[in-house]
Image (cartoon, rainbow, N blue to C red; front, top):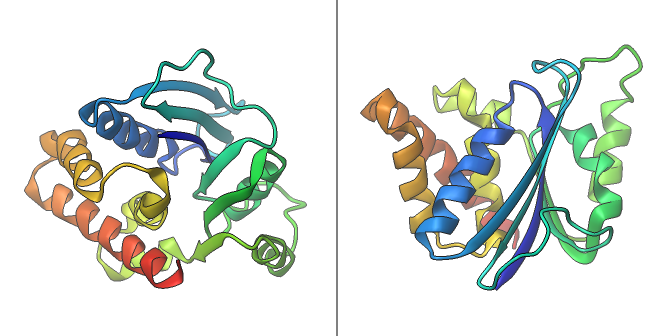
Amino acid sequence: MKRDIILAGVGGQGILTIANVIGLASIDAGLFIKQAEVHGMSQRGGDVHSDLRISDKEIASDLIPEGKCDLIIAVEPMESLRYVPMLDTEGWLITNTTPFVNITDYPDIADVLKEIESHKNHVAIDAEKIAKVLGAKKSANMVILGAASPFIGISEGKLKNAIKKLFGSKGEKIIELNLNAFDEGRKIADARK
């Protein structure tokens, strides 16, 4: 088992929380993991991405070679496209469709979504809307993680246990909101596989 994953978004969207959940689940599954993070100039609103490599064998480097990424998980649609050259021809692109417009020349969202849809293996969902309907508007990242979960190579149960562990100190209500968000994303991905 080996998965090379790129997580992408902007500061404040919960990319590193997704990385933490996948990391905890990987350790629980007895897998090896390497991670590299890049933060934009400003934490909130700046570009954030993480290379995450998971394997049942030791991993030498934390960086993913171009064209070898198995999965891009993005909480921002334009940021998902930034890393498409890294994607393997059979890789999956999982992204939120709600833009985080933090620059004056942000491209037309219809053009961004059209480019995303041109990739044969993609799941593009309005995670912000789903999270808001669930009463968990800060959990759009967990909706995206749920949508990506069938492609990660770690059991759904281990990912959910990692969510419980990560949010455990915040109380049962926060855990439940995040698990519900994860479940909604998972349902959408399962329907599109």
